[in-house]
Image 1 (cartoon, one colour):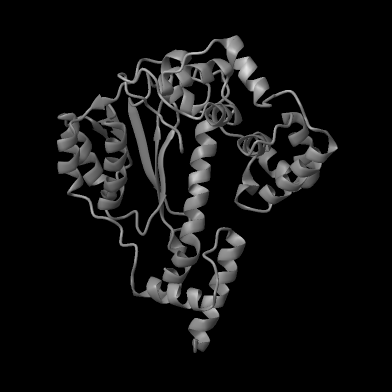
Image 2 (tube, helix red, strand yellow):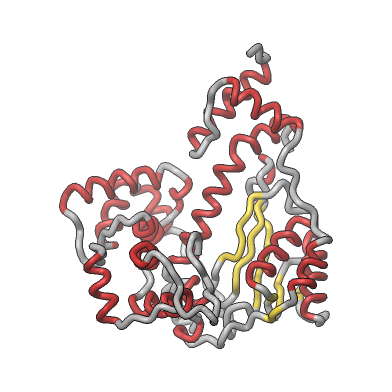
Length: 358
């Protein structure tokens, strides 16, 4: 969970933290009150009762039942219009509602549903026309199985992506914009960084048959000491320009998707899958009927040994240095939105065709 401690040392009798900020963090991500109490105890060694938490929420002005008048409805409408005109345009009303929730805009879900129908009727109809046929999936607890794969839809424009998700909690462990997802070292790097962060490996790793997964599979089997621990473009200049303009924006959006997904609520279904919020199911599996954390601890020395087989992505190259020089010379800021990235791309393409004399 970004910006907050995920684990506190067992030897810590008192963990100093900003109580208001932490409680607001969990509250705005929609966790149940009992989950908030458990997170405070687990991550901060801070135990409070249910009634005390209610008093704290009232003290900090946090309520899930109020809508602050017509002014907030106007603000909500404006924000929904921004969401449906950007990367979140494919999301349904639950997704939009959770985005508002993360931003501290507390509004009944039914109002979001009505506003979305009014603002984006075509999108609502299109989503209704596509119903998912769900399959049965069984998993005993967090870190039993990690599923990783690449995403190639943006690859023709130079933006391959790679991600991994925990099978039990459906928590996204990483979601990265990469230079390539064909090189085995790239997913291997993401895997070993996550292993180092968590301090262990899953019981099994699940990938497709792509050769880019060979190194990651070998790492998993080596660290598990078990061979069954893994189951089985445009021009260079244009591509580099696209990467320079959009990679940061896309990574920011990937980070947002990861945070949004890990804190959204997965509903109970007739297929007997565990339900709740991925972060809660991952860190508090007992609360959701799962087994205690199944992560298999690995010595740091072995993690460091395996990490030597990975290569770091090259952040700078001659194209990137030139684009950075032109951008700085024009007095332009690095883009933070897709609109800004489009504007910068057009400027750079124009200069590439006509030259820059600054």
